[in-house]
Image (cartoon, rainbow, N blue to C red; front, side):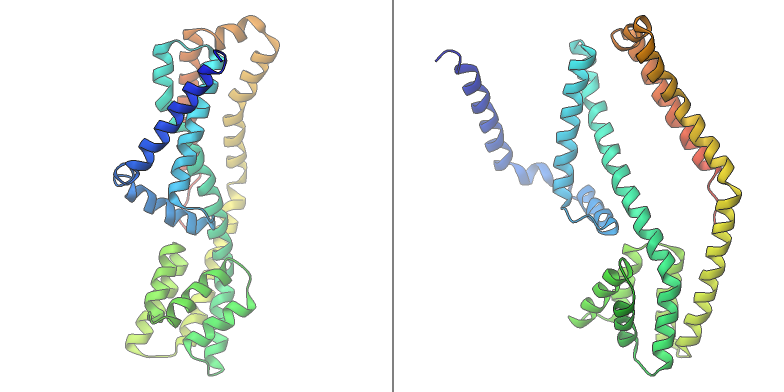
Length: 286
């Protein structure tokens, strides 16, 4: 009976905490709603089908797990443990942001590659006598995701009463890029002033093709610099792993002493600053 008592106490505390959170959930989540809305938009752009609240809970759980692992692995004192908790939550949030941002970048890049073909299909449909909505339906029939999913949303919003131009504005918000913004503006301006929309879309498709060609050339010219950045970024990590694996005394000093913890914090900060600077140097506007 005595051996079961600690487990019963833990279960009771967890249950009481769950009831407390359920009772005041709305009050806790109200200040976080703007952040959740931003996560919802990012999740839509990355085609991740989970809610913003679930992302926030996953970040919280991952941060707590990371904090417990750090306390157990590095034998942190209460003072260092208290300081490590916000750092663990920040690392978990940054990790979630990086995963979402990576998926979003891949999806946006694929949509940008499809946009030239989208414009040419729309121009062909308009030349054949179709209306704008029918041309969008033809794009849905001919292309794969993400263009198919995004234009299905546009057509679906138009079918329930929203104007096509407002639905396209929503597309430009979900798929932010200069090319998509130019397409939406061109269609809206043509609807107000008149003119040959098919010809306008053809010219825009040619412009996008030239922009993509310049972008690919830029990537080829900066490939050596980007590879140098990767080598510089990974070199301290490789050296640190070798030290931990091959030198027990330095491993103990690095992992189990306050000086070692301070050194690792400074290394992480300097690594982050160096990576950010190199990425900034390799960024060009096309």
